[in-house]
Image (cartoon, rainbow, N blue to C red; front, top):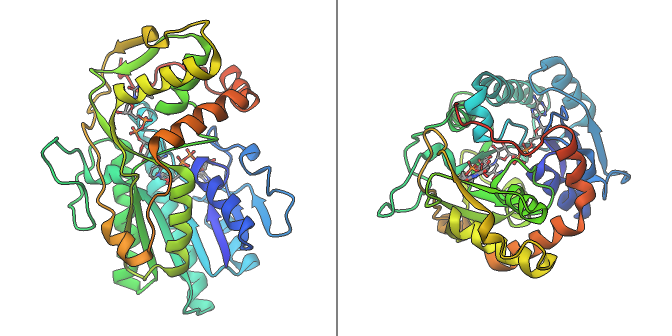
Length: 347
Ligand code: NAD
Ligand code: TDX
C-alpha cells in the first residue's frame, strides 16, 4: 500500500508507521510535530526509502493538497489529533481546530484528489476512540458498533464531531471512509501526560502518584502494537462505510493499574523507594470524569480475524521495563515540554 498517514510522530501513529514500513508499505507521514510529536518514535525506519515525513498542519489545505498530488496514496490513515482529555479541559478550542477542522480538511482534500484519480482500492481510515460513546455503569453492556454517541469531554466531543463528518462524507459523497474506535492504548513511546507512563516515571523517581477521585474509574487497556496491527488490517481489508471497534479485553480500575505498576517497579528497579504503593496520593477528580469504558470487539474479530494478542499483565511488564531502559526518551521531555504537573483540574 501507499499510505498517506497523519500523526505518525505520535504514540499510535508511530507504531503504525514502524509496522507499515517493516511490512513493505510506503508511507508519507504528515505531522506538525506539536508537543506530542517526536521524531525519535520513528527513528528505526526513518532512513528507509519507504518512509518520508513532512511537517504539515492538517488544517493547511494547500499543504495537504500538495501531499496528495506528490504522493498518489491508495490509503489514508488519519491519526493526527489533540489526544489528551485533561488538556481539552484547559483549552478546548485547539481540539476543535485540530480534530474537527483538521479532519474535514483531510476529508475534503482526499475526496478532491480521489475524484481526479479514481481508484477502487482507495480507503480513508479515520482513527477514533471509544470515548465518543460516553460513560458506562458497571451494569451496562460494553460499547458496540451500534452504540449511540454520548461524548462528555471537550476531547470526546471533538472526536465525535470528526467521526460524524467522516461518515457524512461516505453517505453524502460516496467517499470510501472506514471509521475505527479503540479503547485506551499503552506501550512504548506514549507521551508522559497519560496515566500509565506518568505513573511509571513518577514511581521510578519516587514521586507522589496522583490518582484522580477514588481510583475506581475503569478503562479497557490495549497494547499499542495490537491496535496498530488492527488498523493496518482495517486499511487493507476494511469495507467502505464500515466501523471497526478495537479493544484489549482488559478492563481494570485505575487503582488496580497503579498498584500493578508500583509492584512491577519495585521488582525491576530495586527496593530504594519500595513499597511504591505508599506513594499513591488521591487528588481532586477530573471534571466530568467518565466512569467506565468497555468494548465488545467480536464483530471486528468476525470480519477481520483480528483480536488482541498481548495480555495486559505481559504488556504492562514489558512497558514498565521499556520506560526503565529508555530514560533517554522521557527525561528530556520532563526537563522541557512537560514537567509532569497536573493538567485539567479546572482549578
Ligand atoms: P498523540 O497525542 O500521541 O499524537 C498525536 C500526533 O498528531 C502528534 O505526533 C502531533 O504532532 C500530531 N498533530 C497534532 N496536531 C496536528 C496538526 N494540526 N497537524 C498535523 N499533525 C498534528 O496521540 P495518540 O495517542 O497517538 O492518538 C492518535 C489517534 O488515535 C488520535 O486520533 C486519538 O484520538 C486516537 N486514539 C487514541 C487512543 C489512546 O489511548 N491514546 C485510543 C483510541 C484512539
Ligand atoms: O494523573 C492521572 N491520574 C489519574 O487518575 C492521569 C493522567 C489520569 N488518571 C485517570 C483518568 C482516567 O480515568 O486515569 C485514567 C486514564 O487517563 P488518561 O491516560 O488521561 O486516558 P483517558 O482519559 O482514559 O483517555 C485515553 O484513552 C482514550 C487517551 O488519552 C485518549 O486519547 C483515548 O482516546
